[in-house]
Length: 478
Ligand code: FAD
Ligand code: ZN
Image (cartoon, rainbow, N blue to C red; front, side):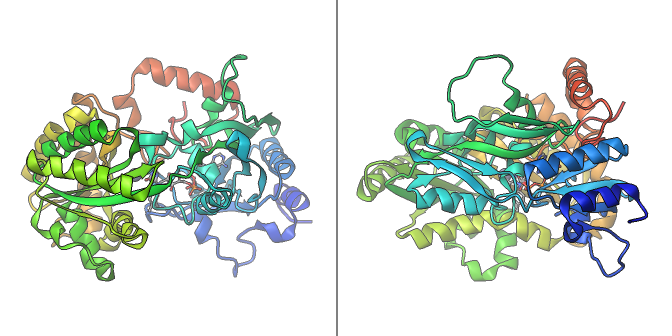
């Protein structure tokens, strides 16, 4: 019998091999205890890795009975310190990664039902084997899980056309804070029989229930996808280019990403083998466009080249390259996706994952850049993001000659306040896709109405009155 009665129970539920603790000094739990950005080092009472929904339910029930809180974890790629335990050594990490089966694929209904621990990329590949598309794509797709994507309502690079993860989910299976199972797995596109509970759990960051499975919406594979990189003279032109693309390319437009020159220079420095096309170095901004065409490659090429020609004539772009193979397109996307990694290589940084009305972005960027440069001489702005969704990753890197850790310690809070106050002034949100977690829980009340926060707290209280699930994440505990 284990000396801690809860751990003995967890071992009975999930098996000795799947309950990891610090009792054995040789066991390294850091992969589950530390967050992706190295912002937090937690300490878990135990990491438990159940293999079925029934086991997840039993784990939550046992933890609740022992007044022990549970932190759900998927791929641990979250960026707001939500998926790791605090440092009390009292929280149980519930890892979903062993729940990685595709339960059912229904090509005629364009759906698949999958377990929460499935890696996103493996699900994209599964859909492709059925000739279908799971239109959710983000740089962490090789290690994030669909449960984590749902829990954070992840965005990514195809939101413009297909929506956020929320829009791709028709049904859910959830273990409640009391350890009950809600089977809401359905492939229905229409169902108005009461509150739509799935939307309560999607984006709830593990604070209301543990997602164990989901029914996802698929799309037909396009006949051709084409990618281009365009040099843009300023942000106002990038926004006008988006309007032009939305008009002339209509629903074929599936990606519209913006990348600032400093962001690209970090990729150039840390991933030199990626060979950036020459145009990046001579323009302040690049835009990566993708179209997906149901007809053919040549149809897509004509459309894209015509639109880019019109943009060139209108002075919205100064240069462009259209990928002439799938490999070249993948290489362009790889550059975009390497920005967060290159930024991590460059050192600790302050991330702002913000959204604004697209129309407000040029003025927001101009004014906020100027304010930051004024307050923090030498500060480096890593600005990139999903411009098509009005979502910028407006990140701040310490001056090149500064000690990044010291800069963050002294300036992070003030930098956040400066940026977020401006976001609010321009009608935006302080978290477009990464969520709140514990990193922004204390910041949220400054920017969210008291009524909204009160409704959120009442929902939390109704579903998890004992604060068993992810306490202190998203909402400061009251
Ligand atoms: P985790 O990090 O393990 O968990 C995230 C949160 O969800 C935590 O609060 C956790 O408690 C909760 N959770 C996890 N699984 C469950 C579950 N089964 N039930 C209930 N709660 C659960 N995000 C975007 O939206 N768009 C991007 O473009 C994007 N790009 C990224 C690029 C990189 C390089 C990285 C590292 C991250 C990026 N992210 C992006 C962050 C994004 O939130 C995660 O990558 C992903 O959605 C989280 O999945 P995960 O399985 O790693 O979840
Ligand atoms: Zn993003």
